[in-house]
Image 1: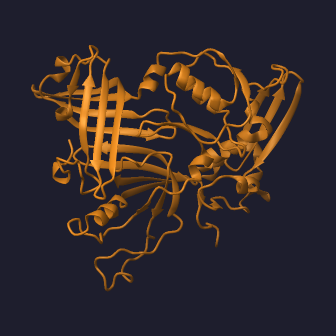
Image 2: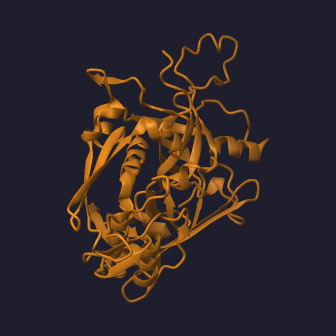
Image 3: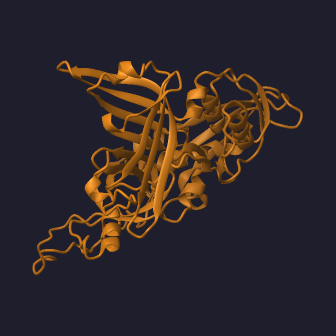
Length: 446
């Protein structure tokens, strides 16, 4: 599968970052019989996202030996993938993962002797979750609930934890799949500063429960640069040339979600929570103002993408329209003697803070293509260095082999990696989606 001209067959050492070696791709059928399918695998992808608690696998098969019938593929299969490579500096990268097959979404025949099809798979805990239901009571922290479901229902006991969830709640899970129940509970999981939580799995197989604050406060994993020329030669300076190519942005497409009406409707800049206590027949309300609270938020950069004097109508500013997004929340103070119900963690409008952070994180998004890196995962912070869109003539009058070293400060800077798609075919490339909520420079200087 890998490009053997860029991989040392004896040591798995690679010379360019798009090289890799799939040392094993094995499929196990319903009877426990295993088959090495490297020869017939045309390509495959492994996808990770901070919005999903499982990895997903998609494999393309080119079958010219009637393998589907010989192996009796019927949807009961496991797939084992082992990837390994040694970087020019001697560092090893190794991944070994088991997937459970969920579907065969595409099948086609070409002439009479070749058939092609794709196989979809997910991690074992996600597969098991599809066959179980939870309907039981819980009293405690949401983070404790997540850990108990993984341990008792899905057989996983190695959750990577960040900040703890604040407050406690008592509730009954309404007959849901374990993974759905955990995400349902996470809707009421916040830090003390109102940061929401994410439950996700990375390429190393680890499952993480981390808040948005945990994620954005990380140091950048690496800085990636959008440029055309290379300074180092692979033959003369292999380590430097490898690193230079590993940090090169191959292509970039952007989604600048700057629509103020769309963001405002989802509670980005102002909202309110109205609580009805059905035990005492009382009501209370809490307003949220983004610009008043931005200083306490964990953000990627320093400056928000909304102007403080952005007038909507009649000298009323965008951060004062709290009725654009209203959360109606029922509570029952008499339901339990010493703890609140499912909605208790949202008290004093903390849910508004979380909704704002979730919404504003989508403000500036880019989809970037990079050379492969088995250690580049979702949930990390990366830094981008993007040149401005200017006429290159004046800066390149006397040079034909160098890049513009100027930086577009509006687009450059730190981002959260929201999703990473690892694409393996003749070469290994990554499609990475990054996003952020704030700018490193104020957008409102003029």
